[in-house]
Length: 294
Image (tube, rainbow, N blue to C red; front, side, top):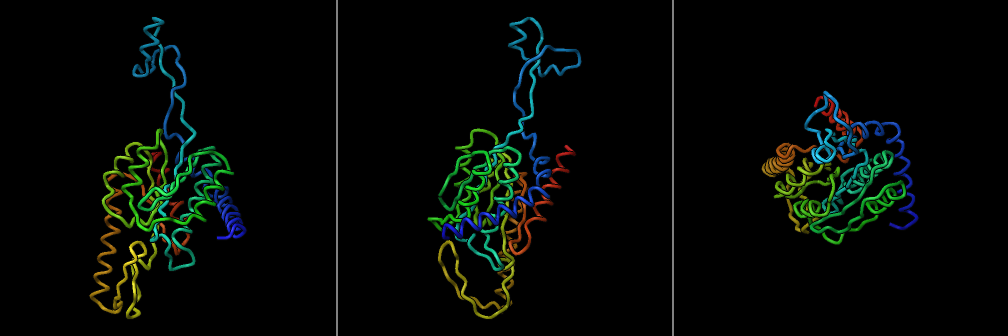
């Protein structure tokens, strides 16, 4: 993508996402993610009715007067976008590729974070961690994140979710909100997902194209695996092929759903041929309602 074309595309995305942030997502984002944790602020003298579990025994012992710890809500968040850059994400049967939708969703969430004074960072991964952009605040940094995600060209083809989850576990030193944006065409990543999810707030953003679930009956067709380059000729009018394809696809989707349910993590389903606004808003509203019930 030429620099002028890239700049134009970044500007269009900023205009579009800023409108959504202001009109729809500003309050939703804040209500869902504020109060992710608490941090120590100060101590004060104990008064009858205080929770004795909050007593600071070290200060109490030194002063011979009971003191309790005071905490404040930790407002500033660390938000990381972990984006799948493997070749399977450069597919789309509609107007846009999965990678383009990933860029727009990242932009929307990044500008929502910036509006709330949160820090954002970005990681591109394939079967390697390809690029790491450290966390930082501000609109300028959010625009850099958008530029990178629009222009980045991966060096490798395949996907390794387990690898990137283990990497995040090593590099993140404080609690973070992690948006894991992928088509999740991989396996054997349950354990690292569960481990990372115990320490951080992981939200899976599952990008899918309806053509990956339902191939039209158009006769013989050459199908290529974008990550391996393997090619196979299939008869799409064959009932046997259609049945096997549907069963395999549905089994993969069920496996992804079960994995997130099992680990207790949130997941947002995004059909890249439709608007991503509705599923994102649905997620925010359901999560906010769930948080209020707790």
